[in-house]
Amino acid sequence: MNTLTVKIPPGLGQELAQVSEQEHLTKSELVRRALVAYIRQRNQSSPIVSALDQAGDLVGCFSGGPADLASNPGHLDGFGSV
Image (cartoon, rainbow, N blue to C red; front, side, top):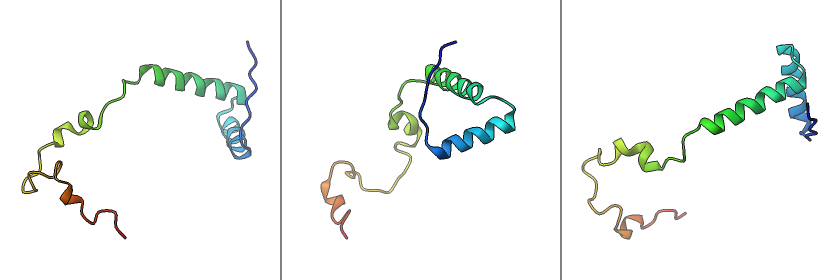
């Protein structure tokens, strides 16, 4: 097996030691499992999805608002003002 040295902040080291003890695993085994899970999740994740794709069913579902809300800068008057 290869050896990898990783620097982690003290708080994370304490959490790692605590979980290692609770799970009855070495810290190395716990980190290996976490890396495997991360890499699998990353490889299986779908490509980046746009906000429109995620909320596409909500587009156009509201009625009664201004028809030119997206194109009329006048609707932003006072927005962000203190």
